[in-house]
Image (cartoon, rainbow, N blue to C red; front, side):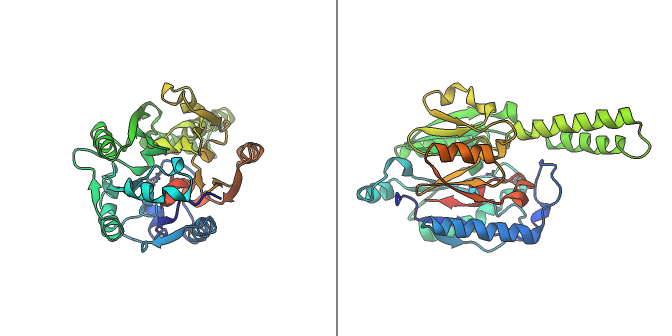
Length: 318
Ligand code: CIR
């Protein structure tokens, strides 16, 4: 096993978790089940050799368990795979506080700042008018892909790129705004469709409503909240990727491991010290990884998926 990552910050969901932002249309999350899934996630990271740094649950910020969005730790971990290079990695490691694009999430950075200030000698930060969510930052060895999304604007992406250049990394932008989710539209349409399916509606109306709901479920599955909703870096220039992003020129130099239609949620996976943590319930993707020689760990993520969260967003790893 490669001893690359040694620490991770995590924060459990709070009692207000269900009040967070979501476009998923999968119903309300069960708080107790979310706690269990979060505990299993932490245990999996520990099994991969990481020391967990735990932040307290924060009821004022329902989305705050998605810690990844509040900070980025730049570290070219995948390229320095042996212990001799620990010093080199540490020298180039830099913590960057983000400025989340959703107003309800911007204050999450306050507690993240106090935690990181105790762990790192210096902190950089994204400043207004820049906005940036860590979910839009995909480290691929010494190169970083920065998504420009509904949450990360061009100013924020540029600010991060400048910081990364200072610390010796390269970066490029991937504009995913054409794949963004439109929460208001889908929720309103779903409400109308449910109405059409009620007892007074004709069979034809109900059938049309069901078809429309299916189409919107597919649209939600292929739409991207963050860049890392559709792409993950494994190692050796290999990216896990959804069809939505696979054709993009930005990724042409990489080996692409495609997740198949219907399993898009699994694209948000993480490689941790030689193992790949993936969301349970995606058998074709799990099989593909296994055939390619990756050791996988499957984790139940249903309650986080209901809130648009994936595996990567529950931790910040370095
Ligand atoms: C949000 O909409 O901000 C949260 N409900 C989900 C954030 C997921 N974060 C991530 O994928 N990096």
